[in-house]
Amino acid sequence: MTTTSLDRADHPPSPPKLRPRLHLPRAQWLGLLLFTLPPALALGGLFDAHEEHVTRRVGPLEVHAEIPQRVRQNRYAMVQIDLVNRGDRATRAEVAISPEYVREAIAVEMTPAPRRAWASDVGPIEPGERARVVLELQADGAGPHAGVLRVRDESGEETRIELSTFVFP
Figure 1: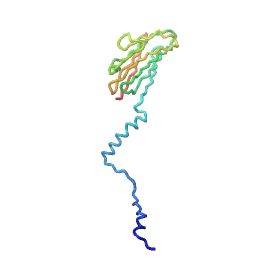
Figure 2: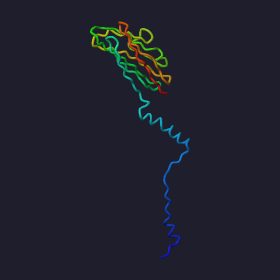
Figure 3: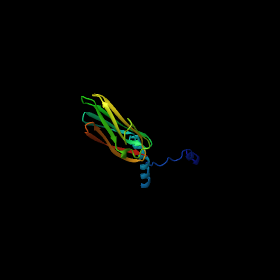
Figure 4: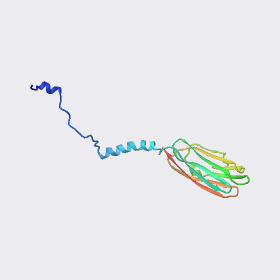
């Protein structure tokens, strides 16, 4: 039997075999990387809030500080300082935070209330008991914020803890 043109029309020729490949100019590869990198970093937790825990000793007091490392702009962050009296008699302390650390904050509240610029008196703290100082602030001014947390016991002995927080826009 002979084939006619109608028979050939029923079966079009098969397409050529091509290897799939993605060909983009260098600028588009760079754009693709810049477009996908921030969401990947966010999924990896880079932009999540993160705290540093520091423990120091000053006289009979054990100082535990929880310091925010990364904060989103206009979000609230909290610096929490716990003082534990490991001595055998009641003691007092002064907790002070350098003004540079809170300079770029929108709203700042310190508990117990500071008696002077960002310095609170704490105590008496009975043996084995804990006292807490909390600094709550609304982060503003994107970029690094640094300062010093200073804890001084009633004998005048002092410890210093570096404060460093990065505020993401």
